[in-house]
Image (cartoon, rainbow, N blue to C red; front, side, top):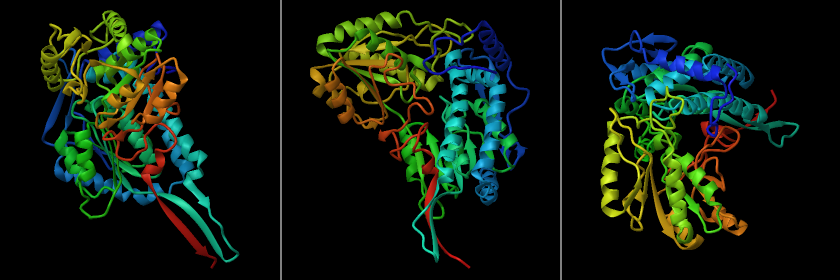
Length: 512
């Protein structure tokens, strides 16, 4: 299906595409006839325990269920992946790319079906769901293209008439891929592709909140690649812990900072070091200075703060505004969010849906009570709708250093702090343990330059009305976390991701 949607799009473009999405969502809401199986060594496997997922927009609709992997099944999946390490590693990168691009063709053919499943499990709007699925296609081209540009990451070194010398990057072996609920298709694909394109096999663990979304994607990979190269486990946190404790050769993870750093500390049973490529949360600031275009700033902030109901690690969490323009900016943000529609994604006018579950809902309730006590609630409340629906929340007048400006809520919850000048703004922006994304709005080049030089974050945007802190896209921006937001100092979507799945080897060969 020919679709061209990204996270800056404002519509699907045609009535046919709108109707196609609505049909896919309605179909997904009918649920499954049986729980989703595990995929191990090319075979569908069941267990005695299942998990169920209900549509967060309609709490009585069970949209998916899946078998939970047992400890022996986790070991079996890892063993299956290990058994294919040599074969997949020794498949040329050109042949691997041919197979992976065929997966892309299948994803394209099933784009609306996957998007409907995504929306049913997460409550995503049609633009978020279709955009996420579309992103996978661009990821495939980005990563396949990167390994082609680098010719498989092998290069000659200085040689002699006697010795032939070369330098190569070699896949580690098998990667555990642990997937979050908020982007269960795009982030699953990104981590899988990083591993697979470079010659690693994978064992994927879906989120227990979104098993069918990840299953729909992984099944297409498993259908096109040799049996055992791609394996899939379902279950909750316990299954993830079991997988991380196996002798996988590396771990790729996207999710909370707490869990990510626990994975970094999880020792391999072999006692040998292994890479943990973890992309984690953010408390992302948008700095708005006195010279800024306030209309652009308000537009970019709203787009970044409330998309997917704030359940993005790159969402704008904090506005740091020069005191001279702060009140005017707050008024502009409040006006824009008053026009946002909270509702069911089947409604084409909906701009944001519910948060994913009661855990986040209760967290927001607590934060609203604290904001009322210590600051001012400019806008936002829990809506009287079954589930966890909140209108966009905007908070001002909190004291400097307040906990609501320091810890990630993962919610449609935005705070505004007033400062005097760029030095104070950057100091406030950097006064958190996270460093994922950040934005600045300024009409002065020297202020933009100072922001770029001094801000402590990996993904930066200047004067971007399309998204103050969000919107990274394969081949356009990278997605790299600093500080507690990333374990490797490099990120996906661009030039430096693939080498993280490989290790260097120098070869000196004397002719026989």
